[in-house]
Length: 258
Length: 264
Image (cartoon, each protein chain N blue to C red):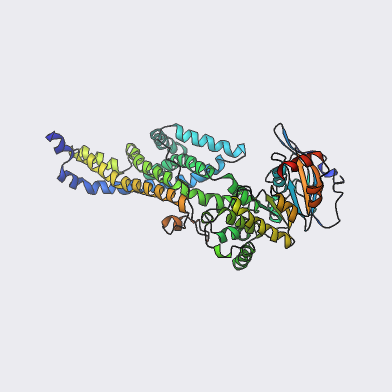
């Protein structure tokens, strides 16, 4: 037992490894944020294609989503690293990691966004169309602003998963958090490096987990009073239109698992 | 279901013996609508002229709402013609979005945009569709909200309003596009009884201002008082059409009589 504590929870080791881990965590954060940006943007396009009445638009989206959700992320990463150079695409390890994780996240985010869009009552689209708005205008000004509030908690949950999943990139030499921890442990043969890495992951994910609960609470409260929200939700997600945003629906419960 | 191939050759169907020769706003010719095996509309002929307040009554499932929704193509009809101010809106290439600006509709379930204030609801379409300047749009919006008695609620969100107030906002929102005709689809059916009157009053005022209206309703008192024409629909056809006093007090058709005896 003492041996375990000495190897895994050694205070001076933790202090020593921390700068190495923080260095790796920076890469982890960059990869996660960039991949999430690709994921949300790509996911929105996929979601809109996915709900299209036209089979020719819907089908590619379905194939894409099934492909990326139906195969292991670690396999997608390995394929990208080995196959892309054969097509003359030579990206550095971090960029390749961002692209693969972004494309993967897009498939998951597409389903979250689709569920969000479909949770808006059909009467909203009818009312918008009946006023002469085009389909895309109705989406942009009526459906999506209402969707944002509902998908924010599940999307944040997805982001938490994404942060943890970036550890997969350690197998292809991306110097992210886990990779740095592994190298330090291999070099020093002291396992506190892993403990430290776990603590740094927790430091990143726990605030986000709290944020999700807070948002979900806000959303279910909003259902009762629909008062205009003065907080960041309103400011960030009024979709550039001059009209304020006010009401919320209860966010669909988290459902994606990788 | 494909549309009838002779659609553009059948404009000469005689449709309205009651036509007074005023400007036709909506003309429906031999309209059919089929959901799978179910015939919902079986040849509707109807003309609404400028200034008419045409009330449509009939049992549920008779096709009243479907007919209304076909007029602005929220529902696609199976065959027949609908002319809005002379334009065949079912012609291939007809501009549906332009058509819908001429035809306002108010729904049973209000369908206000919950993320926008009352003013935002009324201003959205004029801003984004008609691209009119904001100052002018806001002025019109405020005037329309005043028309329905809600000038004190402009900055409030829909969920903070009663059903009757929400429905009046929906009326103002439709009016904001300055339509030539307003369609009302059982607009008081989802309201608590004590809120019905304020909505009917707003509609009555609209009628008195000369708005052309096509009103599907179960409010027989309103139909009789405000309507200039009354139509009784049953099983997908127009059974009888007359002036409201005539239709309610002296119905000619047996089905009309039987329906009225149940609801009056």
